[in-house]
Image 1 (cartoon, rainbow, N blue to C red):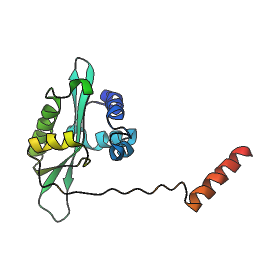
Image 2: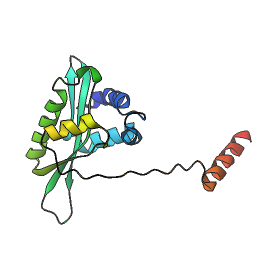
Image 3: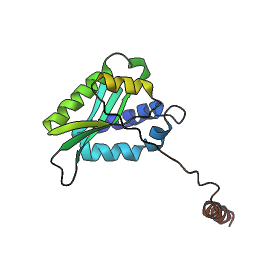
Image 4: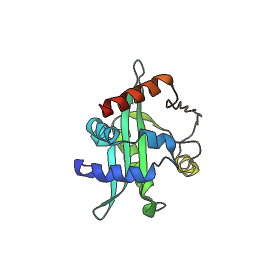
Length: 161
């Protein structure tokens, strides 16, 4: 991945990680996340292109845990344009990223996905991922919280002054 690819990767992610299909990923995918990851982990940020067009990406990072001799590779984001699904793009990206993790002495590759994303689960299982641990994400809408209402009312008041 190169700096020039960031807008195309962001746009592709926007089209893939929608609130309707993948609400947790939708909440986490933003331009700051992408730029920060590219800035700190450029070597493990990959794109797949068809001609001059970005059709897929794999964004990973290395993780070192304190007091642990093992290094981990973490595949944080994997996305492929709908027109290029089931063509081997995701597999090639995963294989390339895995090789980069191995070169950096990773012993384990971690990935997480939504429990209801059955195609992603099937893909990762097919590629040797296992030892699934269910994780529950909770949310709390703050729009009815008294402090939230008070703050919004104050902001509206400021706009009228």
